[in-house]
Image 1 (cartoon, rainbow, N blue to C red):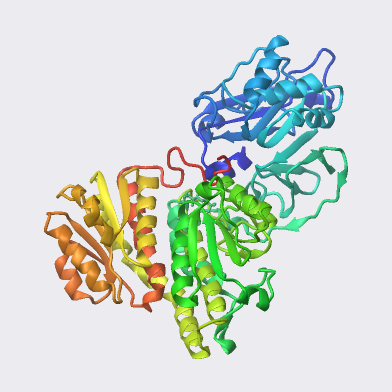
Image 2 (cartoon, rainbow, N blue to C red):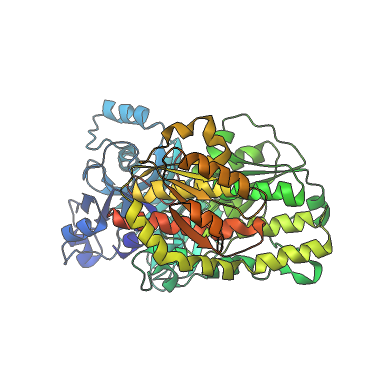
Length: 602
Ligand code: AGP
C-alpha cells in the first residue's frame, strides 16, 4: 500500500492489490483443494482502497497496481489485479496488449469467461492456461502470445512467496533489500526499502522470492544482473512542509538548476563540458544540425534549446514532437545530432521515435532526469539533468534543468564554431547567475497569488511571447490547462493578428511575456493591439520597466538578466500563476484529472 501511495503521482484512476489467502499465509503452503487469492480493488484514490483493505489482511507478499484507464471505463472491476477464472493467478499489467481481442476470442472458444473490459485480463487467463507447477515458465509461455507493451507482475496461489515480472516497453525495476525483494515500475516506490536496484530490459523476465531473484530472457538464457545504487534520498520524495509537490518543486528550482550546472562549467576555457555524451571533440565539431525529439513540456524546453543553438551556436536546429516524427518517415541525416529530451525517460512517444531514428542509423543522445530510465539506457550517450525526483504531474523543475542542459550544450558547441573565449566567458557568467535570478523571480509569489485570485474565474486565456519567450508562452498555457482545467492558448505574439485576435474581449485575458531586447517594442505593440480591443493584459517583464507597468492591467516583475537567459526567469511566475489559479478553483494540483506523470502508452 505504501508503494502504491508513492506511485500516486504518476496519475491513475483506480487501484488494487492481491495477496495470498489466509490458509497459505499460515504455513506458507496452500491447502489441498486450493486457496484462492484475496483481491481488493477500487476505483478512485488509494485512500478508498485503503478503507476497503481489512487491518488483518493475511500474507507477506503480494502485488498491486494503480491503473490509468486505456481499455474499459474506470470501474472497480476493470481495476487491477486481474484473476484467472480459477482465482489462482493474479496479474497486474502496465501497457497495452494490442492483440487482446484475438486472444480473448481464442480463449472464449475454449469456454473462458471474461469479467472485465480490459486488455490485461487475457494475461491472467493465459498464465493459468500454461501453468503446470512453474509460474515463471507459464509467464514465459504467455509472453509468446502477447503483442504490445507490458510491465507485468504475476503471482500464483500454489507458489507462495514467488513473484514473476516481465517487461516489454513499460519500465520495471527490481529492488534488492535485506530479506525482501521488490518489483516496481519506478524507483520511488522502492526507496523506503532499498537503494539497490536492477533495471530490467525489454524481453527480460524476473522470478523472485524473499531471498533471491533470477533474471532471464524469454528464451531462458540467464541474464547477469547489474545492481545500480539510487542516490535519491527519501526526503526528496516527501513534501517537506509544502502544501503539495508542485509548490515544493517550483521553489526548489534555484537548487535544481544549480545541480544541473554543477561541474559542467569550464571557466578557464569559457566553455562547458558534458560528460556522458560519448562524442569526441571531432565528432561534436562535425555536427551540422541538431534535432530534438520530445513531448509536452520537454518539447517546449527543446524549442528554447533549438532557438538558442541556432542563434548562439549558429547550428540549424529543430524541435519535433516525438509522436509526429515517428510516423512521418523521417530523413535521418548522418551529420545531425538527435536529442531525446524526457524528464521520466519513459515517455513512449519519445522512446519509440528515438528507436526509429536509431534503426535508421542516426545516433541519439538523451537529456533525461530519471537515472536508469529506458531512454537514458537506450540512447547512445547523454546527460542527466539532476533535478531530483519530480513528483507533481505538471513538470516544473525538470523544465528549467532541461533548459540548463541546453544552455551548456549550446555553449560547448558554440565554442567550437563562432564564439570567442571572451564571449564564452560572458555567456558562462550569465549562466552562473541563473539560480540566483530564479530565486529572485520567485519572490513575486504573493503578487502572483493576488493576481491569480482576481483572474482564476476567467474561462479562456491567451499566453503570448516572441523569440525565446514564445516557447515559454506555450509552457505557461500548458501549465494552466493541466492543473486548473482552464482553457489557455499559447501563441507567438506576432501571430495573433492572423486569427486568434478574434478571441480577444473583456472576458479573455492575455498574459504577455515581454523581453528586454530588440523584441520589446514589437511586443508592446502587440499588447496595445489587445488593449485597443478591450482585452485585459497581464505582463511579465523586467523589474523597473515603468512604461510597461503603466500600460497593462497587471505587472509581474522579474529580475534583470542577459536577454538570452530570460526563459529561466519568466517561467517560474507562469508556473506560480497556474498553481494559484488551480488552488483558487479547488483542483487537485499534484494529480490533475486524466493525466499521468509518465505517459508510457502511445
Ligand atoms: C508536463 O507538465 C506534462 N505533464 C507533460 O507534457 C510531459 O512533459 C510530457 O508527457 C513529456 O514527459 P517526459 O518529459 O517525461 O518525457
